[in-house]
Image (cartoon, rainbow, N blue to C red; front, side, top):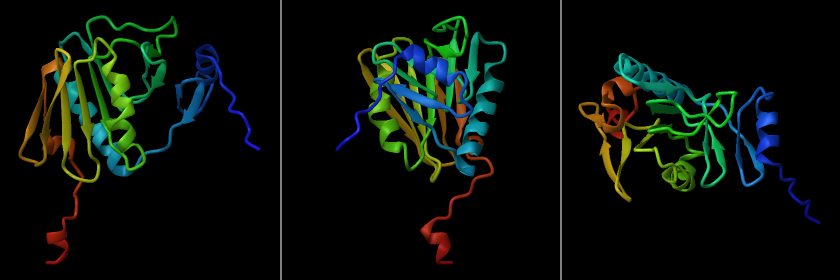
Length: 195
């Protein structure tokens, strides 16, 4: 005999989440606990946050780490991107100012357990945000960034795969240098293991 799932309302989720010591996503009446992150994941997040923060000085954009919840009205998803940037006046869901509605750039650092979700259903949700102009997926197990840029109804993909490359973040007029993104991280290549 299967036990029916208990569904809660968005208001119940927010009341629960604001008291919780761990973060949860919310979708379609269900809450999903978010797990911890690896050393590489944390280093990439910190490196990218530092680079963006430095380059946003004097601009009308704000960058938030993974504690800023984003709500997607078209789909009802509440989620916590690894890094989110808003330009102009931030819009929030309510007077708690902890649920952002108008990001222009979202960055996710890929984990083995979330990569297919971040590339698939989560990106589909993100694409419905009218203000969103750019989406970055950063690998933590190799030098690799996928950058999706909104171009009308389409999303154009560009990527960087070596430490010599950099990516221009058009939506916030910043540049991410791959060496800075992967600072203090070294990947072992099959060729290095045989020597």
